[in-house]
Image (tube, rainbow, N blue to C red; front, side):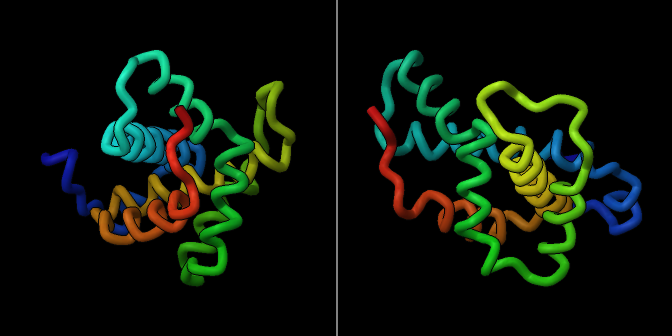
Length: 137
C-alpha cells in the first residue's frame, strides 16, 4: 500500500467515522501548512512551530472554511457538514464550540479528499485558504 498516493474505495471511506476522517484530515492539513511555511522561507524551528499553530488552531481553521465554502461541490459540502455536526466531547479553551465544529468539518473534508487520492482538489482548496496570507515572522 502506498500511503502517499491513496485511492480508497467508497466502501472503505464510508466505513470510517466522521471523527476518523477529521483525525486523518487534521494531519493532512497540518502537513500542508508546514510545507507551505517551509517553502515560504520560515527558518527557525521555534518560529515554524508558532506559525503552524497559528494556522492549524480551530479559530484559524474556522476562518479558512469561510473562504472555501462557496467552492465546495454538493458532495464535499455534505462531508463538511457531517464533520461539523459531530458533537465534540470537549472544546479547546481558545476556541468557541462553533469554531471547533467548523474546524472538525474542514478536517473531515481534507481527510475524505486525501483518502480518495484527490490531491489536486486538496491543493486547490488549500491555495484558496492561503492566497491572502503571507507567513507571519
